[in-house]
Length: 314
Length: 314
Image (cartoon, chains in turn blue, red):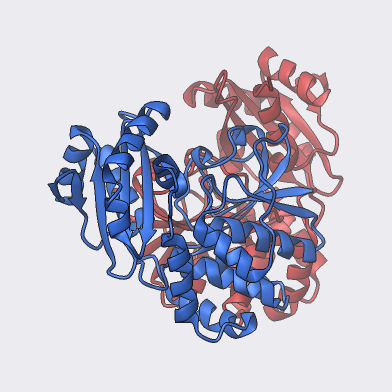
């Protein structure tokens, strides 16, 4: 039985990709079970509720040597703690390649597209398998989520074609209305504790590995209601300070992405983050908020620039 | 312009995969140029001569930041010396994943099949592109070469189906006769210097990286005429000794694979290699020759066992 899971602090792509890839493998006579590595966010809970599907079981550890398939991630810092002891046989992902290595030739499928869902649809087509309505709805939700309904610079023509193909199969007539409902669900944060908000879509990245290794925690809150988030700024800064110590980080950033206006305003904890944000992005910083303009993609706009900054070229 | 190349000490799969992938990308409006990282072996020279195609140009270095596509390899020890400074945007491979990482999401296509040629055929099909006779001949040759005409344990059903599809497109009526001609060309080693023989199909592998890092050089001579090779045993052992010092290796092995009888007899340089071969493979060693039985695949049978041996589990 192959265990299939997405990254820690799962988002809609991580959860739905695990569900869909496990179904695809099962239909190809490869026994597979989807798992999640954390709580559902409000958007993902909405998507699964609308689809009428249960969340996959929570996974906290696996015995050494267990065969696993990773979706929507490949770096050990974003996976099960003992990933290096597991046998990674398959990865379907759309992120940069990190520290993964394998003892045997794996099955790897990486494409620089907006969502793992887009790659999964290709796998269905290549296998000559018809996409079922539930699978279509899950892949479509993942693509809309990861690309912010095509607003993110990570969006590709493949993502748009995939949604155009999937919407009628999923029985979703008005894709825009469905996307807005997803984003509204995501933005309805209620009285969620500040640290939970920070960790909802949060990844730790190692930077500058060769010269001066750094660990940075990068959180993102994508919302249609940024006013709500900034209303809790003091709480969130306190949570960032705690997480920075807890995770032994060199820096921590929390980007508040206004989905509809496509802007990024990032909370600035200390002089360290202030300096980096000014030097890397030329950001104006005021009242512990850095204006990162239209840089709404952590993967495409924040991480590569930080990686370059921390890796001096000779 | 994307530079496309296979591994150092190129074999038929490395050379033909670079040629074929560059053609495939060009047909998809991605400008690409195939290169080689070393001299052709006799089999590959035969394949290109029969196909009426020139060898790709030799590549020794590329400027930092150049965009490259790797085929049939992914580890830095098997690639251009400054691989870590290049921008790897694409990899098509069937080996274990080594030390590759990228700054941006790449296009990766790894499958645990017998030959890169088998994966390339899938890429043609998925792109809806007809395979031209020359491309078919090159992919077919790669598959026959890497799988020793389906004798190697790396052979999969996909490899066999690919050859069955490609042979008529390539205009090769008798695949068995063509494979034997390839293997005869490969075995016609003439007065090739001993060090050239050793380095013809030779890869350096890092083992036991976590605990006690080791570098081992693993050469293979696949031949229909093992008697010729053992006739030059003293010369070859001297070359192994020189290469071990030159490449600062912990161990060096030269496996003489009898293609037709599917056996592996490996030259044993010193007490170090003797101990490892006995402990890892339970090999009988006599007269500086270890009997490795039917272990004819370096990738599938030698490397994983050595990796496990040098990486003690807790």
